[in-house]
Image (tube, rainbow, N blue to C red; front, side):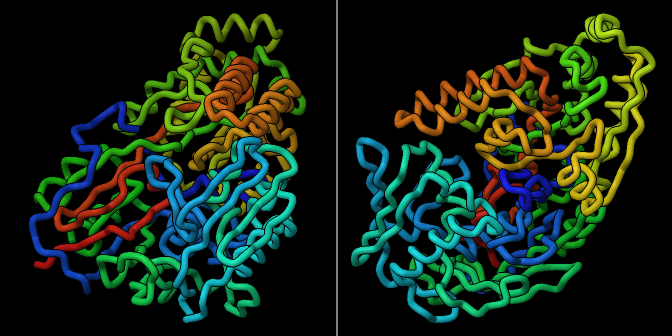
Length: 503
């Protein structure tokens, strides 16, 4: 979630419940297979948790927008699969020079925007140049190493001032989105992209509807429309599913598996995810400036308890999840050991420590309850301040006014936040920053990943935060639905293959 820029504040909010496949609850890891004939005019209704505040993909950050608009409405030169592979999109192919300084893309012919205007090479040049030069646009800094962006016929060339191992990946996200130059669309309420769906309507506080783009350059969407129905509460989502009002329930509670599968109309699917349940420590002053205190908090927390409570997921002890480059099992860095935690607090000269946990109010109360109990067992009193998200944004993310804070960071490959001392994590380690810079500059992907791995170990050994769990994508899928993604659905939801059978 919360990305690299100050406006990137809602990326972790796409799921409202503890959500990885290593810990199963009897669910499957692939979507069910329907035996009915697909209905090309069907309306598929998908429950989502967090509704975006507006639809401006340029400036309004957050996974709530990426989840529904990228791939479906907006596209870039390249895209990513749920498995995190980079694939062609508006470019048919690309080449990278041996020195890593020149990226050449071949722009696809015959592409139109959803308002009927043709996609031109100049649109690509303008989009990427404007993104790079406009700090207010999300992920502008991700193009920092791009020196020039030019077009020659259908060939788009990016030249870099220095190698950047993250560039191609960045182009699969907001940094690479192609918009129409000179477009007058009201981006806050409308959209004009090149994807397989058109933004049809937004009933604020209720739902967003996408309809099939019949002029799409690729294979036509397999349903007539997709309705995103925003239902924050899991019980209400379950009731809607059982009443036949929704076809897919994302961000679901794996503990409700038996109830939603009871009638035979749904199947629970567990998929891998880059969701990171992150407990941030404000290290600027006070007891939390002492690494021994932070380490004590980490060792006081029973990570397995979160997995048991959620009925899904796996433990995580560092900033990189298993789907991302640089992952390493760091469980030995901070094993659950309340006695060791007490000893660390005593060594630090800390007693009767009282801290406040600031947590957005849409997360399950179980998270705070486990933390309060575990920390109490080692002599730390934890007060819970459950706030609405705008308050969290202002107090924690912007003003860094907090002791401890919990949020679910959903974004893939977001290690750069630990190399940014201005980020709300308040973590500042020059060695980590240097290792991250070396990783970005590496032209060998394996070398880049190894450098990230080394940096991530340091972050964990510094007790820069605690990572309570690596969540799963928990999705209840109707047995009349095929093609529903099951991996990383809280971040991106490509629905181009979604189909719904008749009857």
